[in-house]
Length: 264
Image (cartoon, rainbow, N blue to C red; front, side):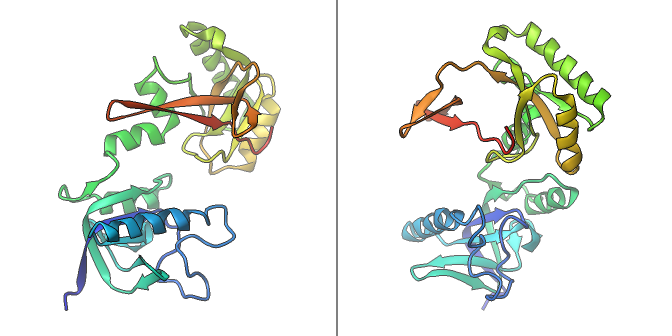
């Protein structure tokens, strides 16, 4: 029997977000902890892995901490008809579903190792991932299409004030500047899911400083908040929201994305 299992697809999630298959059953029997806000991901990825099995492909799920080489992990999860199963064997795949969030040097190093061989093909294009994972980078590369975005370098009042002035300058030059309200959104530069998103007045510098001091490890950016009238209604819920256009194979899908804030 070979020491390494050859898989067709390997899903790789950031350690700390998902659980390694090496953890004892007394700690977890699922990649995402039951009771956590990501517990529903177990259903999503079980469906994905089962779909691969039905299509005749072997698929596994692992974490960045388990990566030991290009496309290679020390252990992995499988999803069978009766549920999740831990496999204590090395596995390798050329096709990687890359769900890493390289916001720390450790995570970045793990991702580099995972994709260090050109034969490894990530589902996410590396350059596209880098562009859209970073909200500031998105604006720098696509200033005509993205919302004006500036970095807030520290929680110091003077640095925040400079960032607000810079943002106001970008807004003043924007061809659709009337679309922006007097409020701003302070948010995690690399965040998702509505975590660390705060809507406030441009004058609330003290509040911004307090929030940034509370979350020292988070990199923050500022963006203008869009004008809304009555908002957008979806599933009988009306709220202020933006609409996202997703183009795929020359087809367009419109998605409502309700603004989620942890502190309004």
